[in-house]
Amino acid sequence: MAINININFSRVKKLPVKLQVLIVAIPCLVLLALFIFLVLLPKHKEIRTLDARIAKLNQEIAGSEAMVKRLDVLIEENKMLKTKLAKLKEQLPEEKEVSELLRQTSELGLQSGLEILLWRPEAKKTSPDYLYVEIPVKVEVLTGYHNLGVFFSHISRLPRLVNISGIELRVKEKKGAGEGDITAAFTARTFASVSPEELSRMKAAEPVKDPKGQGASKGQAAPEKK
Image 1 (cartoon, helix red, strand yellow):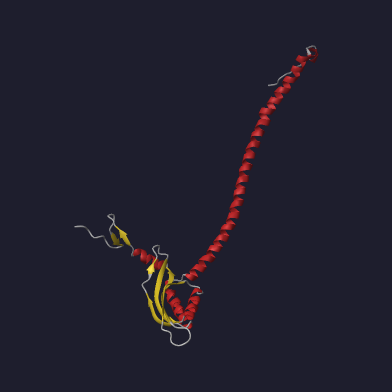
Image 2 (image 1 turned 90 degrees about the vertical axis):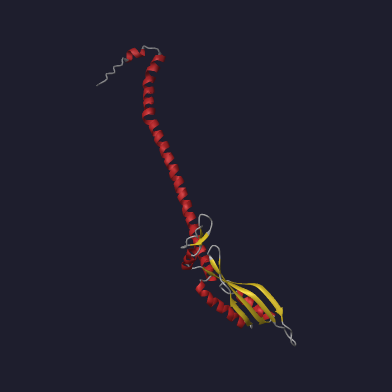
């Protein structure tokens, strides 16, 4: 369908100036409106959409960069914790290694000039959370003040953890010149980590409570009330 636009310019020239300006301006306004609605507004909407996507991508990039930096920090912290754990494992041996540690402690006593009168291992105690086992040994020695201090100094430098507590000193009767002997009684406690097998065994033997609050060992039924 063809549109035949035939404008008689001679007649237009005879019209008032304001009307001539209006006739010329109307097509321009129509074209401008078409440009705004068909071109400018869609482009502006597309620009806003792209700006929003770019802002979101920038946020994601910033978050990823922060995560990468945090990852480096976490890797470094993990290395430090592994090193600390290795040192703690050195101080807290497995229970099967405790006998060797006690033997070293006894030898240190002899090397320090102690006469061991009593060396009696006591019943071991497991921590409530099953993290470690405490192994106490009652010790009584005959020695001098200086030798006892040397022994305690050697104990403090052991890589494994040995705690000395409950020290009781009794002065022996001094004979002649020089340092008198003393009898020292104390408890030497060492600690051992609980192996997974031992942990499973202890938990299996742990008493369980029935619904009425009475204790019963696992694998055993609580006594019935008659």
